[in-house]
Image (cartoon, rainbow, N blue to C red):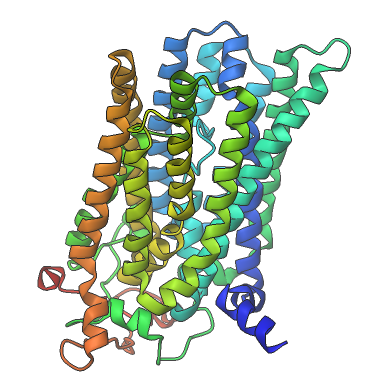
Length: 491
């Protein structure tokens, strides 16, 4: 029994079990949404092809969809805290449902483009829209710092499970519907887009169950001032408390977050690093990896499906190891030391002219490729101010999407020129560069904590009511930890 209890604590099961109801609802909401994305991704290209859309136009559709995601993510996340996080999630889910409805009812190419650009439709099964930025900011708001790594681990795992199950359900449903009398592939695809719309509608109703504690101005149960060494380390090194910034005047600026001077260079550095990593990911998404094994080794579709399912399963299960590892070596080191091996194995996949070795490198890559995600989100929630989290995560999401949208066309040119292998090598090198950049810029916080004393910063709670013209209740709610980090001093 003691061993079982310890194992539950190591895997974060106790943390998620003891978490507030709002945390569990946010995880459920992510599962439903990623299930819907997984449901639609497998049939998106097939549906467009069944309508007679050319490959060139399908590529244009993908690019425009990602650009539409940039617009929706940037606009909704910037105003999320001012408008209300629950309202933002409901609005985004409504846009997602509208997109599914258009796909279920229309066969017009430009109508589908408009629905994907103005609404929310994931072309890759990955998270798209403002959901993740808002939810992760809310989870950080609700969770004590020393438990964030556990909570983000399960939040990430639930999402990946939703995508995998949705994709599996989609394949089974399409096959079953096509065997029914009078059902064409196009009708089967439209039925699943109808299911996508209904799931998005359910996703729009779930925020109604969230409490007011999820909002930016609400103060959740206050954690102990003695935070874990992990979070203290990240926020230490000459950190100083500073009075909160007064709100901007004007009706519109009331909804806009203000980044503190110390956060601006931090966001610029993170944006540069994340842009490099996202571009590398865009060079070799799952669809291109599948194409590589088909073109190079003539792998049968059934064997390819089994291989990709295996790597997805390994990647999902490996996420459980991220939180215990982060507690022992720190968030930054966990991010780097798990992601770096996967980058190396990615670069090695096309080099041997041998199917067994290429498969081996692909499987080895999957063992650690997702372990950095939960520690990364916990790290981001720790290094920016609470009132800035939603906006900063939204900005970083926009940067990643823009960088990733350019990469597929580069890979397409390499494939056409007979240099498919170059995309893997370049992607692996860029990802390794990203890891080394993160290590060089941010590992210092953990090192200072290990050394103790010297360089240890102050994290104080602002007790003063600030902001002229604000009501007393809002002033009281704004009493939060306000950390100023001298980023230049971290180098």
